[in-house]
Length: 279
Ligand code: UTP
Image: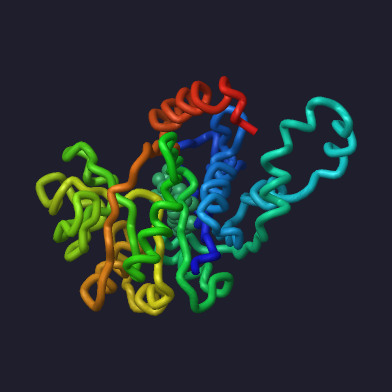
C-alpha cells in the first residue's frame, strides 16, 4: 500500500516573479487556499497521509502553514470564522508532515532524490503542487493513480494531450497503448522541440514511483538545462522494466504561470467557493 506523498517544492518559481521572490510559489492562493493545500487534500483523499515536503531557502511559510497558529485560533475561537480553518485542521489531524531541504536547485530529479531519507524503500507518490488537478466527476487524480498502481505495481506518470506546439514545456512520452487511457512507455524526452517530440502526450505533475528510482536518479547525469531530470531516470526504468503512462480523468491547471493560475482561480471560485466547498 502507498502511504507517502512527496512534494518537491524547492524551485525558484521564476515564471511568477516578483510574487515568488520572498514567498514560495506553492503558497500562492487559488481563491482562498494555497496551492500546496489543494495538493495535500488530493493526497489524503487517495489515502496518502504521510506528507514529505522538499523545501529550500525562503520556503518557511510552507512549514508554518501546516502547523497550529495558537494566537489566531484563540482569536477566532467561538466565532463563525472557525469554519475557515476546518479543512486545514483536518489535514493537521489526519496527516503527518516531514521536511527536508534541497540546498542546491539541481532539478526535479535531484529534488526527488533529496527526499529519499523521508521516503525510504517503498513506493510513493509525487505531487508538483503548481499543477492543480481536479476531477468533479469522481476520484481525484492521485486516487485514480493509486488504484492503477495496485493493478500494475510499477511507476506511473500522469499524462495529458497538449498542443503539439507546446511540447517544449513538458516531458513527452511515446508508448504502446494497452487501454484507451493507458500506455506502456517506451520512450520519454524532456522538453522536446515540436519537430522532435515523439507524440503530444505530456507528463504532468503527478507520479507514482517505485523506490528503485532513487538509484537510477543517482546514476543520472545532468540533462536538459543542466538539471537532473526525473524523465531521464524514468526512461531507464521503462527500459529495464515497466513504466505506465495514464491519461487521467479530470482537469489540470498549470498554476506555475499566470494563464493557468487565472483559469484555476475562476474554476475554483465557481465550483468550490461559490458552492460553499472551499474550506
Ligand atoms: P519547475 O520546472 O516548475 O521550476 O519545477 P520552478 O523553479 O518551480 O518554476 P519556474 O519554471 O522557474 O517558474 C517543477 C517542480 O519541481 C520543483 C519545483 O518546486 C516544482 O514543484 N523543483 C524544481 C525542485 O523542488 N527543485 C529543483 O531543483 C527544481
